[in-house]
Amino acid sequence: MSDMEVFLLSWMDQLYTYIKNRDRNSLFAGALIFIPGIVFTIFALYQTIIPINEYITQGMPWDHTIDRLAIDIFLNILLFAPALIMFVAAYLQAESNQLGFKVCFALSIGALGGLIFNLADPTLLIISMTFSILATIVGLEESKKNKHKKYSPIIAEKIAILGLRLSSIIAIAVLVGIIAYVVLRGAQFLSWEFITADNIGAKEIVDQIVSGDPRSIGGIRIFIIGSLILVGYCEAIAIPLGIGAAIYLAEYAPKNKFIDALRFFIETLAGAPSIVIGLFGFAYFVRMLGMGVSIAAGGLALAIMILPWNIRTAEEAMRAVPQSYREASYALGATKWQTIKRTVLLSASPAAITGIVLGFGAAIGETAVIMLTASYKGTNVFPDNISLIGAMGNPSLGGHDIPTLQMWIMNAYYYIAQGTNRPSGTINWQLENVMFSGALVLLIIFIGISFVALILRNYLAKKTHGAR
Image (cartoon, rainbow, N blue to C red; front, side):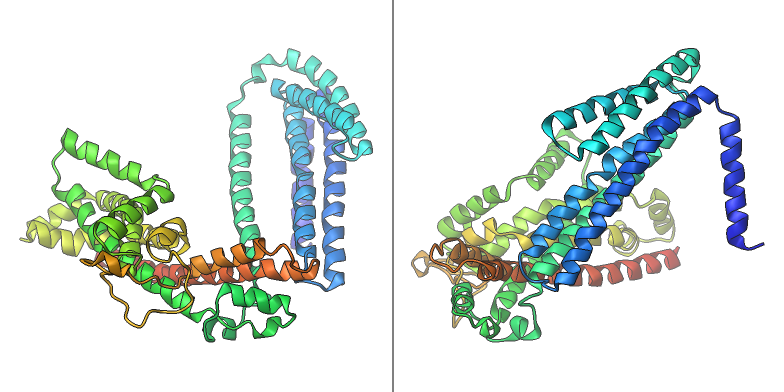
């Protein structure tokens, strides 16, 4: 007997045992609502698979059929929601749980509303409403006889586990869907030449696509370099300050109201809108200190934005280090600073790196702060002399506006949106894909940095585990 046959026989035996130990009326109510659940599932699978096959056979991966495909898949996936609710209701009905007939009653009302407003296939809604009403009547009568099962902890736990699993699946599916959409839209112009070739502005790219020669759109190398320099300047400020502040708060700071207020303001600053940080950077760094629109002003403003994340993540990581590690270090004759440097920081470093990566992701994708402090004009050339302190001490110089990938995407949107005389059809789709190409490059940079950080974090985690 094969393993598959053994599995099927075991499953059938468990199903038989489950049915045998349940009340017949409860099983009948569960079966009534289980039938439309199966019908909805088959219909949803059919509706989801057919559009995918149609779009694949069309062989046009770069035009607007991608949007139609995404919308069709999303709308058809929504059909799985009532099917899932029906399966849960069927289980509750079989368990003689009073919640089952309430869910069935809600399904019948929902199907009636769908018929009135023509929200789905009428045949499906009529089937669902009919069986839901019958299951409601049978389940109501049976649940009255089994009131002791109204609040079953086992059933509640199973439903909670199902909800948690669905939450994880939905979150992962949304993330994968967003990444896939950006990749499909941005891959049209993504090439090695697009990343490394001589720089060209968004306006020139739009004009070349409109002129019918999208293959010679040039590259965005200079914008990538500008963004990396700006974010690197930001991290060079935020990481030491964040780690230093975290060490003080976790290891040296006394427990009083002032420190509690300080932590409160740090957490508040972490949730401050980026436009507020940008306006502060513009008023204080660009104007008051005379840095002008420059790397210095932009880097300092971005550092202020991500500094709270670095502080809170590093502080919590150090607080999570067991006190026994510190006591063992003191017992060996180490000073407090030696204990922090060689024991606490090493143990907390894997978690602290996570906060740094999150800060990097926020900085590399930030636009409002950069637009107000570092790249107002969205220039496509580096100045002859870049000063890391901007025009400090001489406000009349105005600083050095630098090219950044974020502003390149913004300018691409601007030149596409203002083009009232642009040709219609596929050309508009290509113009929009220019923006997605820049977004895809940003996504690749972030994934690359995250991958490097993951390797470093795993290395430090192993080193910490080995030290134990």
